[in-house]
Image 1 (cartoon, rainbow, N blue to C red):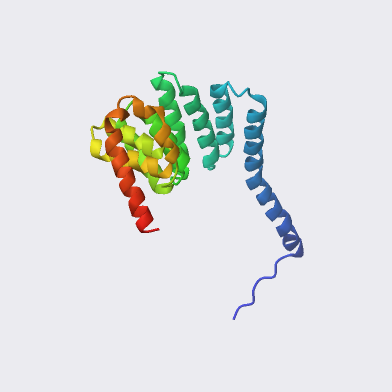
Image 2: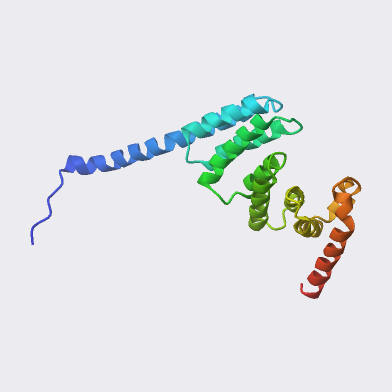
Length: 207
């Protein structure tokens, strides 16, 4: 058999240094993105959500493989759209959150937020995102409520009643919500309460 070539000692000695440089090159974007993110949070007033989101997106540009930065920016844009009838802002928030899901589709908070962002514009994608969020975290309060509203938007009253009952099951405080005294929930209160009592009976029979 042929003898293996003998590496020069200088090349062998340089291997740890080359490995260190490679590791440093890989870590520098992480550190820089981390610095940009925390600097944005520390120096941007909390009320200025859109500028904060733009600065967080700067961190995402440095580390585009990190879903957290896109999610954080999307959450800020979603909060900025709260109470505002601004379809363009909601669309911007949805696009940023979709970038986060493309990197990590198992983020329940991102799906839930997308559900609320779609609800004023189109109940169909809102329903899909709420269903995914419920699948990922079945006992999260408000997901079933959002899903019920999306189902009502699609005129699927049976699914809406089912989701309202599940919201009562995972979030008992929902029974005191003022939403039950307002349309459209007041119309479905009795049916949802009856389904909720059935769920509770089944849970007690099979703990």
